[in-house]
Length: 177
Image 1 (cartoon, rainbow, N blue to C red):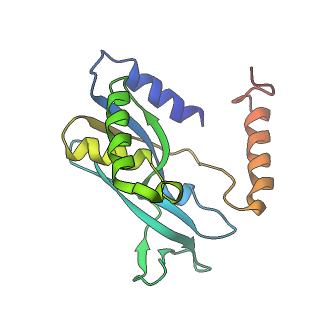
Image 2: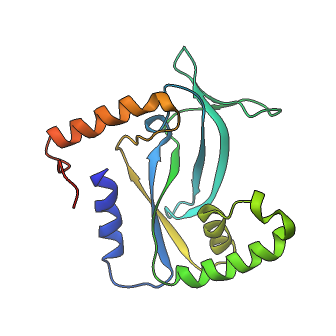
């Protein structure tokens, strides 16, 4: 929502530091579908608030008793609180990231060989490499906004209703230009 974009704009409008990037993290409990499990990257950060990594959880759902669990196929179930900061790929990058993307994509292509059509090149993987190689930092900016999107066909009506409410409240315009 608008809060996420304000946080990104505030961070990126500060005096230029070419290797200081940011991301907006949502609370896990504010990003779930009522219609099935979701995959989310839980943000790990240091005491300085900088991202240290992203741990992927691939089958998160809310049980009837309200508890949240990641129940990956063939793996052990992990209890979650719903307060964990998660990445919804809302990033704020400095132009220096394009060099990192170019380098990472070339490495990715060399590493996948003939499997390129069945392999995914992801922004979180690039960010993880950037952090591990100490070529940049990523500040984790938290929002309390609810994230909404269509993970399942059944999510569409709720998303439409949420957008209509934002328009009715004046937070979003009726027509985007």
